Length: 253
Ligand code: PGA
Image (cartoon, rainbow, N blue to C red; front, side):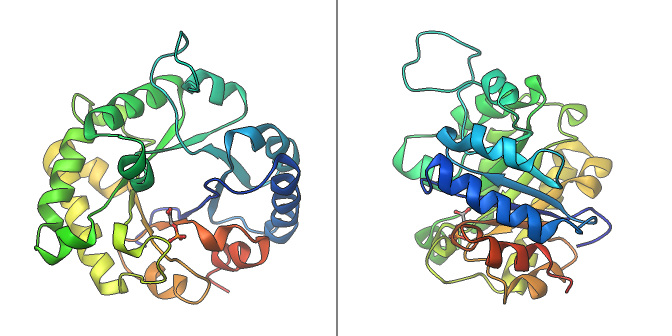
């Protein structure tokens, strides 16, 4: 984990009504009240942002969105903009999640536009990258990640990226119960950090936080966090219950 402050982020995907989300968030706030050395974020569905935001006020838990559109406003039916999320209380925005790339046609180019929009309004982007099982088997993991990072961060300057967070999520490990081993993840995280160094310099490569995602659970978080280039986790399934998510947050015991 190096000397970077860990971030444990929960991606609630398309789960929970506003009431259910507020209930879980309330339990979480109670369970992590004493946590001071880990950044915590939850990203509920858009419809629950408001109810969750009320419950987590003045707590260590921050609010995130799962997606955004890059224009500020306009005739874009069904979309939500970065300024709207900011004013709803979001501090973070997950961008380019593999489910969005897979089911909703997101590309490296649209991911890049979304990252720019988030940065412009002061939302911290959680930029998701990762290879599919097929790509890993064809030994294309590093070239796929190289392309996703290069294109996703095109035209951005190092000084714009100081709030950027990268989430490495091997697609084959998401929601499958198959986690990358901590050594597999470390190898890739180190590679991603080297890509950042090449394109944006040593300072950013040392400070940028790289999260691991894909079947993170209370019983595998400690070994993952022991790795020098893993700075936190993006958690799906195990973030839906306050009990398991708070155990992940309190990985140090
Ligand atoms: P999972 O999801 O923890 O359920 O595998 C992770 C994610 O999709 O961010």
